Length: 148
Image (cartoon, rainbow, N blue to C red; front, side):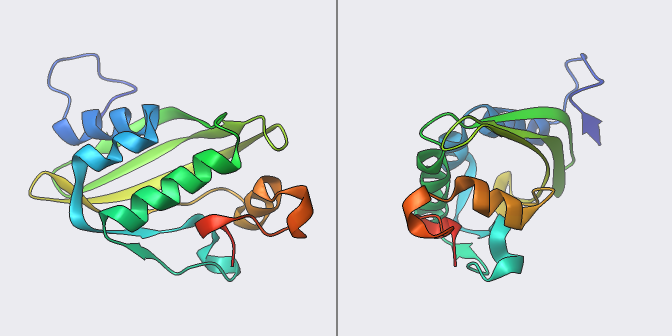
């Protein structure tokens, strides 16, 4: 396993580099995702979609998240660890629209044949995140794939 945050050596695992690239620009997920990728959204425990399946659905979910923050979303990574099969990313999700907030997260990833095949979004407080991203006019329910 390789941890990007503590290893400046060129022996960084390719999946660590992939995850670093994805967290720097969520839409680059398209380059590394398997066609049948499965994403388990952050709000699954509060009545949201249990999963998004397929590259188009997953990318739509990511676009909705970016849109919900007015394009201000930043995924600051602190630790990225990965091997041939799994990856984990710890960091802070930050945005300043519709409200300014910062929330710790842990992203879990599964790889097969060099591609991302599954991802679990795990914000520290999923319900609070949903509320923070909710447009004022929606009664607390965000648009797109982010709400129930």
